[in-house]
Image (cartoon, rainbow, N blue to C red; front, top):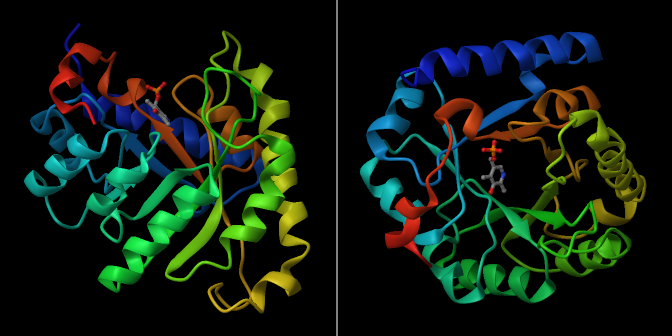
Length: 248
Ligand SMILES: *Cc1c(COP(=O)(O)O)cnc(C)c1O
């Protein structure tokens, strides 16, 4: 069957809407990020033409190339593992870097931003399923990392991100999503401490929660995700061979 991006998008958006209704949430609280990695620009433009303005990529070179080729009103999200030596290509240019999992990486983003006099929003990535195959800081060390990061100039820590385990039944990830929310709530409960730091926004702290992918975005929205990252469910299966030319 031919791939119909517009139809897939409509289905995903309806599922998000229904999940919001069930959870008593307002649809405006949830941003759908169309994960376009490995996909060609003409296909991604179908999602753009259908109204999508948030796109996620996991490789720096592929992201910057698409950024140049596509309209300038797109919010680009760096969702993949980021090497320190690639930070300079995206710092201050992307809407959000989701994958900060060490102080050294945060420090490098900050350093590049200071150099260019730009600012950058970031998320801390948590290895929520404690999987060897995944990047991310371990759950127990999140607060410690957050404490260190918020002292850095020109970057704003907006929230938390995770890639949950790939499970056959999305219900299996519900408890992990609850743990994500709990961590954000715990950290935010110390808000008076954080909001007095110079680079946090007055009165607000962690308000972005990025989790949920094709297999589990419905559960993610029910549990409180504010950003879901859906690739396959919009653009179809990926052929990673096509990404060969873009390797970081
Ligand atoms: C590829 C990817 C996604 C999208 O995965 P799908 O299962 O295709 O929806 C989401 N988040 C990250 C970090 C990814 O690398």
